[in-house]
Length: 196
Image 1 (cartoon, rainbow, N blue to C red):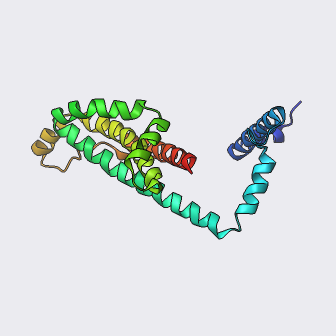
Image 2 (image 1 turned 90 degrees about the vertical axis):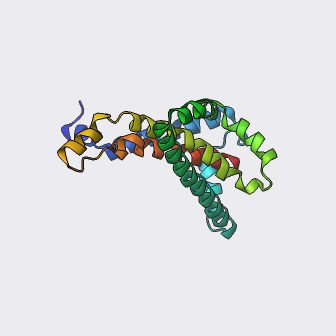
């Protein structure tokens, strides 16, 4: 029978997270042993050993900083473009109609397809991670911001005029595009780092 102390420990969030990570590391190790080819699936220890060899290298940190800067630049450009396009779409219905097919296309086409096309378009392949980050972020931010702006009750501005108070007609930014923006950043980073 599990003691009360152990039961209390298992309810701790950090311990649950640590056990989940340990579980998936064991699954990774078992899968690596089953495949028996480090070229197809390297073991966690092999990855850690290679990473430990790369960390002291100046070239490694230079590449990490350059890639991170490009990914963040693409993210912030995508964030700005998504917000601007959502505001335009909320204000003008024809802009919303024009952008709808384009946004659906960008959301539905796999990243690998954009990567191949972008290699033909871009003169400098170093900017590829910035473009991919941008394309991953714009549709997510656009869709969530537009939904938030369209959900504002049309009577609120009129109520503000009647009451002569500064009632905010803006949607709450955190639920509207805080978590989606964080998700978009994670996806952009993942997609762009895969290109390296």
